[in-house]
Length: 477
Image 1 (tube, rainbow, N blue to C red):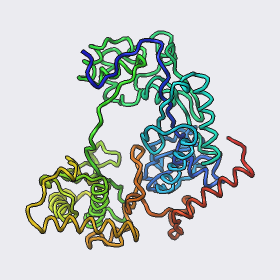
Image 2: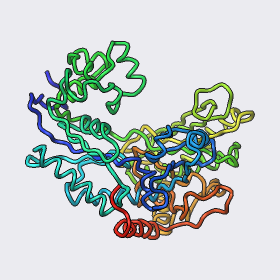
Image 3: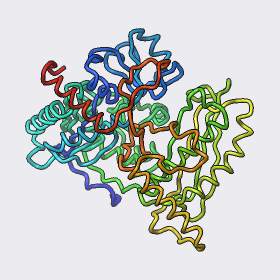
Image 4: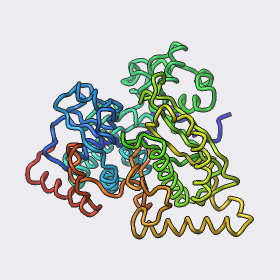
């Protein structure tokens, strides 16, 4: 019997239902958009611009030299001596993200935001005609071009469901447009049949090894598997979803409950000692706690993670990993209780940092429950602490991040100021969600004095100036 979350399988021909938009080299493209002098040049964006830092985005000019997401800054310079390494400016990218959403919304409603650079839209019955879907895609590209800038290019995929539409965006970059129809899904002769199964979003290296062990290398190989075989390959219902997805059916996944809220931070060289790292960890916890309360959750557990510099390790920074978890009761929202728990965890971590300094710290609040369903505090002081934390959130939202803060983060107020993950779009209404301000010149030399900072209004003015430049000078790339 078909599980409840699965749509009834739709036989061929399948309908084009989903339009997926993937912004190309997003962070690097935003930097090139607001700084026209960087266009057509090799550019990479990194949260830490020293040689030990890691690139989180690279322009297509840099990719030609082998620079990609995850490349160390030092290696990027070796591969491409002319490359410009830019300080990441997370809030600028969020501001541009909202402009892109507004641009898309002028042509079709955004159905779901999947990440900072990916959104999907649902096609109505008239828009499912391939020619109309193509025309709509070109209109979306033009809307982004006019409202966001000439360098904000995107690849658009149109297919019978979200996973296939996402796959289509990866088939033609940059500025691509690919439509997958039923004949393109055939295991023999279909355009996706010879692609590696790892091209499908959600199939990582570990899963790929399992598939290869079963003799499956391509999407065509996967498409030939029976529903039972697919269920066996994944060890559950995920395999059944893929069985239907690859045949063009829509699969309605159950709504997922947010499982955790957390932040991590790669420490600057001057902060790679236990005392400095502790201040940063406390800062990260306060940021996570503010998000927790904003989203109306309470946490039952807290985990501290530390990466250490060392000789024998598999970590990206050449060091080992230490982590430990503390219980927070039936559901905690107040920062004081969380800070006490983190302090106890830090005492355990101290002994591991006596000989090997920390290079990254992370704090995660998990085992979340709705704040409405949490057990009410038995004692008045516990309830009071929660109200104090909520009051601090309101004051910081009104007057700026860390207007009120606990003494134990005094030395780290400007550290861990808010990076950005591809799969998470910070809520700018939360005072400390992401770096409050961004530099005017992200390409500055590290040895120079700290750069002047931009307000959000000034950042938006910078985007507007780049649009004026486009109108006057730049034909579409």
